[in-house]
Structures are given as structure tokens and as C-alpha cells.
Image (cartoon, rainbow, N blue to C red):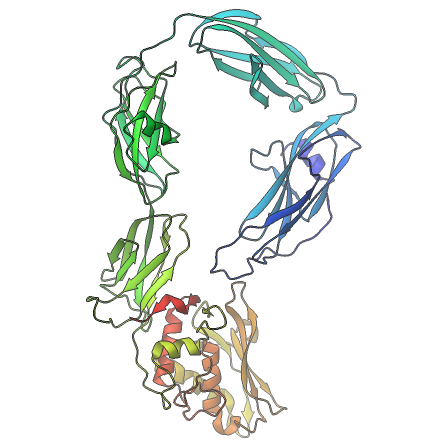
Length: 612
């Protein structure tokens, strides 16, 4: 960052503070960027005089997602280049002129995932400013002749009491060709006979000085076009949105010499006629032409990923003559690759022979459960997973139909399939099937809220199990037995005891007074909504469920809540609510539930799971 910018940065004042940039809504939904609704100054260009003048900038913004917004003001010599520095945060800032120059102030409003911006362009003029002085010019004569098709370089050498503010503008026959550039160099190709007046102007934003050249262009233009490109070939690129092309260079005149440039175009239909050519899209970054016979290679980017395009290439010479339309080829644009591992959500073991598909692109998992979907198009939305070999027969796992975000690069997506469990522990036949039971106990039925579950982001859970003797019963030991019943039944390492409560993910808290219900509470959450800290509250004087008598059942029930299970409606389950459970240990249905939660990602949606 230049010294003058540092000097200005030192006196920018912050007038409003902002909170954290947290994407607050549902992280599973697409983000809508903030919108700037008001700003001042309303003019985007302002001139002020140093050192006394100042400008105050303000922006107001809204966010349709309700995200918390933060603000930043950036400063640079030009808004086109990357910004030099963050000068201030807040909804407004004061800019005081110190040194002369041209500056860009950019206000940004962030919502944690994207930002909106507003640019102001500030010209600072110092008092007692001296006009720039021209000390050299190229060409060093003001009248000259050149041949048609030649390129001439023009240059103005100038000095000023503040050279960094100088900008250069060039006009050809009164038309601005290069405007307010920091570079004093201008090149121009004269493609037609005649007289041209070239005027170069240098400005310090207060004074302007100019140099004028008179160019006489003579000679005969080139009317012979390059030959056509008939050996164009290509293949899918490496990066998403790219294709690779190769052809043999024609010449400037037919197959002789070196042409000026290549024009490569793409379309969704074949490019066979001049009308097709005019409607096609130009692709930039074509190579610098070699002499006739050179093998040319090109990577065309910014194509629509995962789709087919028609491509053709033509050569152009110094006088704009285009070679004829050559061969037109059809290519698959590099799409996005999706890969991952499909596992059994009950055991964590990989599943072989599972069909994973997006649109018409499909793969079957190998012995390690791995799938690979190549060249997915940008518009991909739904990923489907099935284990049925016969479409008419249900598989042994629930199907998956998962919406995916619009891809921006290759991505990995691991998938967990829930076994098609039956219900074995119900007394009241409350639930139709295991999926209904599963959604109910994870509160992801989706009837009133989003069907999203926020679970622990790690296992095993660290627990603080404090010593407690109550009416000659060792409750610490009873709690250990209840934890063991969940671990033995699931076959999983769910808990590990720690001696420091500050290190625990959850802890048991005993209340020696009060006849309240035992309960489990989430006391802290991570920014993504997953639990960070939980507590199990045990009331020693509770008379409805006496801890000294029913301790094992009470602890096991509350620990089920810690693991992520809500209340069941069926009396055959330990997690039954509104009444005392008939069983003291977790049932097979509940053990299966926890196995699935354990093997699922921390955040998932129940509407990903479908009936077979």
C-alpha cells in the first residue's frame, strides 16, 4: 500500500460497530446476498481539495435471509485492481484529504457468505498545484506517414509535482480510444488509408496538456484471407467448464506466413454457415499464432459444465480477413465429479453394488463402497441412491433422494443408507414402520419445522460423572451401568468419562432440593446448530421417579436424550414419554436408532430418506 494511502488510512474514523459475520439462517439452504438500499454521497465521483476537505460515506443494507450484516471500507488507487487495505468497519466512515491523487473507496456489506458493494471515485487536488509538463514524446515529430496495416506506438513523457496522480487519454480523429490510463503508452493499428489526427492528453485532474500527431496512411490493403482450419480436434478438459482444442496453423495469406489471430466460437447447434457463426459465442485466450504448419493448442474455459458444445475455429489476418469456416466438432465440456463412499448406517460398513445416480449419470459402488460420477452438469440437483437389483422388489435399505447444491468444483459426498429395519419392541403398534419411529424420535417429521437433525460432531462423548452417594446408593456407579447398557446394546464406544467438568461434552448435575422432573438440556451450541454442551439434571428428592430406586432406568432414559433421542409414544420403549417406562434398558428399536445417528453426519435431513 502506498504512503499516501497509509496517511489517509490513519485518519479514517469508524462511526458504527458491527457484530460477527455468522450465516445465521439454515446452513442447508442457499444464501441470498445482502442488498444495499441507500448510500451517500449519491454521486459516484467527487473532487475535493487537500488538506482541509473531507467526505463522509454511508451505506444502508438489508438481507432477506435475516443474516447479521457487517461492513468494511476499502481503499485503493483503482477499484478495478484488488483493494489495497481495509480502512474501517462500520456503516459509515470519514475520508479526509491529505495528499493529492485519485482514489477509490469501496464499501462492502457482508452477510458471512457473500457481499454487496458500492464504489466512489475521489479526486484529491492539492492547493498550489502545478500543471504537468511534457518533457518527451514518441514519435518525436508531429507529422509522419506509415503503410496501411502498420502499428504505431505513441508515448508522452511528463513530469509533475505529484507524478502519481497523472492520467493519460488518447483520441484518434476525436474518438477516445484510451481513457485516463496510468500508462503513458498507446499503440494503434491503422487499417485503412487516409489522414488521422492522434491527440494525447496528460492531466493531474486540475490541469491538462496535450500533444498532437498527424498520420498519413498509404498503401494497398491485404485482400487475401487465411485458409480454413479443417483439422480441428478436441476433448473434454481438466477443470470444470473447460475443453481442450488442437489444430494446425494456416498462414496469413492462404497457407503462407503467420496469421494475426484466431477466433474460436462455441454453440449448442452446429456452426456450419456464416449466420451460425454470428450467433455463436466467442471464446477468448486463443494462442498467439505460429507460422503456417504449427500445431496449436488451446484450453477454452467458462463453458457450461457437463454439457455438449459445437466448436469451430477460424484464422484472421491484419486486415480483418477471416478464413472460411472449417470443420465443426462436438465436445463434452468438463463437468463436476462427485465421489464418495456409501455405508450401512447401522454398522458403518461399506456397501457394494449400490446404484448412485444424478440425472442420467450413474455408477455402482465397488467392494469398498466407493462411487464416482463424472462430468455432472452445473444444473445437477437430485442425487439418488438405491440398493434394489430388481426395480420391482424392495431392497434391504431405505432409498436416498438428496438435493445437492449447485456444484462449483469437484466434490465428495459420503452417503449412509439406513437398513430397512422392522419394529420389534413395540407394545402398542404406535408406529407404522421403523422410518416413522426414527423420524418421531429425532423430531424430523417435518410437519411444523424443517426436517433437520443437529447431532454431535464427534464420538465418543466426554462425560463428567461426579461422585454421589444418596440413601446408600452409589449413583456414580449406577450411571456407569446405564451408559454401559447403551454401549453394550449398540456395540459402539459412546462415552468416555473425564475428571474435569470443563472438558466434558455433557455432565450430570444433581439437585438436592426440589421435587422436579429429571431432564436433559442443551446449554451451548456450535455455530452450525450442533450441540456443544449438555447437562443431565437429576433431582434427588423426586418422588415420581425416585433415583435411589429407579436410578438405572432414569439414567438410561436421560442418556438416550443426550445421544439424540426424543420421547417415544410406545410403552415398549425406554424413551416413552409422559409416563414411567415399562423397561429399564434401551430396546432393540432404540439401539438401532442410536446406531444410525452415530453413523450419520452431524447435520442431516430426514427427507433425504425414502420408502423403497
